[in-house]
Image (cartoon, rainbow, N blue to C red; front, top):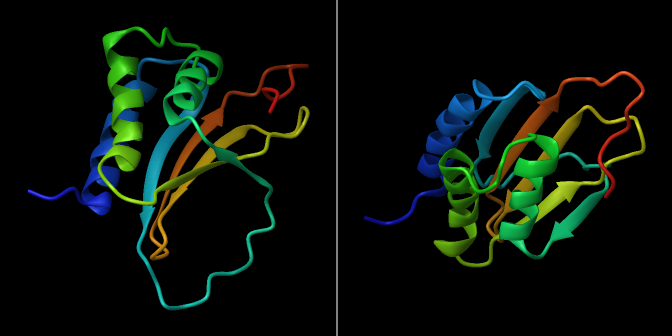
Length: 136
């Protein structure tokens, strides 16, 4: 059986739904697959930061954004499932949308491949009175 980005994104979306039910720091968690398309996508004006160490990045996401213990079984597998996109495909790249000071209530990751296929992972944060977004 070969690894399918589309099928794994669907699986990950279901797993994120289960994680969402265990946290109170987010209003929603999700994963969306965007197939490769010959059409030219509209320009993305957001600023993205390249993620070089996926495991470290997603550990920080689990601990700092979701407020969960990265060593728990549930979050260990969440990080593993995210990293599988890199481990079981070639030329996968991951970017995190740069957080602005106090303006962002969403964390977005864009995973992409040279053929144009993409996966977006998002977390909609519960607004904190007087709190800013995590530092980038």
